[in-house]
Length: 97
Length: 401
Image 1 (tube, rainbow over the protein chains, first blue to last red):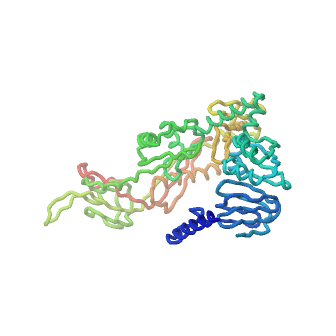
Image 2 (image 1 turned 180 degrees about the horizontal axis):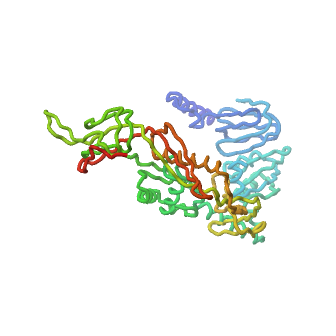
Image 3 (image 1 turned 135 degrees about the horizontal axis):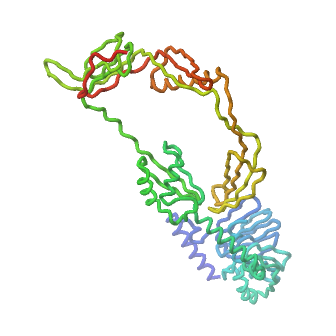
């Protein structure tokens, strides 16, 4: 618990510096970029890993929250350490803290 | 097929079926170990299919061991697997290799030449000179040095001031610029103006020199019209280059003999064909399709094989042989006269330059049965001023007609 608090404090300190210098947070991996194209394609940049994957639900770990994507026939078209691209019928996108 | 798919196909990939309890962890490990996987599709809770690169497939051992996932290969795709399958079909491989070699050879040579058509220099002349400069159909592209070609073209054609060959794929476009000729320097040598024809002067415009005749005066051929020797109290005697435009009404006549019969070649309508397939400089002809004729005319059409702007050294030449017969045709006198009148009128008009024919009449004679002699008598308006160097003897009185 103490470890997590220290990490959170450090992250917020980074954020403060980035805010003060007006630098993009995506450059430091402090935030996630989600791009939805139409209703059948979604690209998540800056994620940390997959928590759950099925053809109707995808849970992605992000720096501050969990991204929950629901839909049908969800397929991972591309995956790398920095980004994940999904295709299928996207019904909803939620952020869970 | 996208570029990424083409790359994956070229490198080869396998479609695998993964079964296990910790599939998400398996994917995360693969990602962290830079194993290239894509098109991951879940089938139930514990199974998914995915595409993995050949290199990545051999590195799946560690993720499988860590997560207890079992892998089954569903299919193998891509060039490495295709080449393994085609390894025994030697003819196909040889054909493919030959295709690659021929393609490379064809794409490394020039097969079409075009030249700038906005100049007064004929296209054929420029193409011939370009050939002498080392650029012709079949020249290797790497041998074309634009600077050398330019230098050769400027040497070969003195009318050019600039030339540049633009190489686009297998074609060359020669862009040229012509020299702009400098204006003619007016002569300054002392001379008089004399009459080239006898006639009645209708108008005079003397730019330099001394008037010796006036309008409405009849002048003879060779008569001095404008003098090049000027004399004044203030300057004294000086010699000038006399210049004038003097128009006069003159009487002209042209005469010529015309035959009443002519040998005329006509086409009978019988045709024969021959096709020739030309590979570079090597022609392969078919036998003559149809009869062979004693006398004939030929018409040739050439179609060069090309795909878009890429021209190949293969062309199909269609040669048409048309039978002809030569007959002696006797024309009626009226027809010959009509044509002869037109011919004489054109002949006279050409000799007048920018002058005009005011009145005309024709007189026809028949010296023998086969010929007709036609004479054109015309009243014309023409320029009669011609320069005569001052050293020459001047005929002030002129000739009498």
